[in-house]
Length: 333
Ligand SMILES: *Cc1c(COP(=O)(O)O)cnc(C)c1O
Image (cartoon, rainbow, N blue to C red; front, top):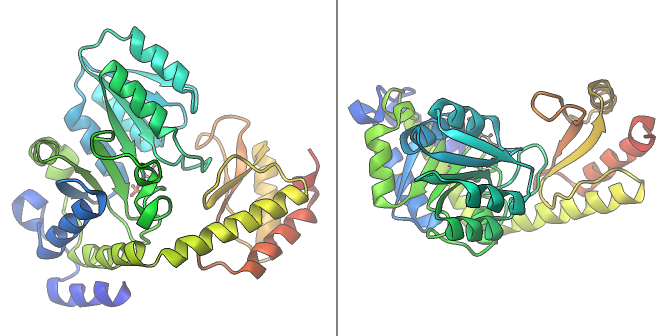
């Protein structure tokens, strides 16, 4: 990935020159878009400079003031900001509560309805119940937007994300958003969908039109990342082996493990002071685990956010568990 980045930087420079609609659309961007369309099984994909900008642009272009939007209470802040900016009527349903979502959808009299959800919730690590959400969308004629920033590259066959994990397709999830800052290990984002969707976004997503295009060198690095995601499934097997090892060990020492089967393993400690203390204690032992506090998470939900990766070793997982088992902040309520 570094080699690809360097080669492209040497060839194209370290800037992109302008917005994609002026002169910023380069060959590496075009190739990456094509590969992402193939990867997600959709006709087209479109790049954005970040996930935040993708969400602002997509929601801004698609959702109009008369529409109704329904979102999970734990959706990523960028989706919340995007929906607020759209000035549509929006309601948040309790985390993971598909029954509440169905009730809201059935009671809505809006001409056009949207359901917007994270694929994997970024601070809790659990997956959205996409099959049930898709069923509700079909039943009540709502459009589904899934931001799979933490799902792509990690879950599903060949890293196809939560959509692939549940065996769903473009008809179930017409608007799929992914980012390159997590499993891809770079930065940037994309939206994948129908020809009509992408053309609409090219014509009217303001965060695309009025912002400098992603760097060719970044796109070149992401292309290599995508190739690794597609072909090196041993990394996912290794990651999930480490996740299991961590969860088993954590349960054994009485830690409050959460219902997350992926690399994000939150340890909810309640008060911010407790989370910060725990984070410092681990750092003193050479283990970097950030404390996440309100307003990033709900009040009283301060936590350690443990992020596992395929490049961790079993010994590192055991050392983390050992450090946590000897700190009273974890084992005492
Ligand atoms: C990280 C994240 C984003 C933001 O992506 P950036 O590329 O960092 O701007 C958006 N949505 C979700 C669900 C995320 O986890």
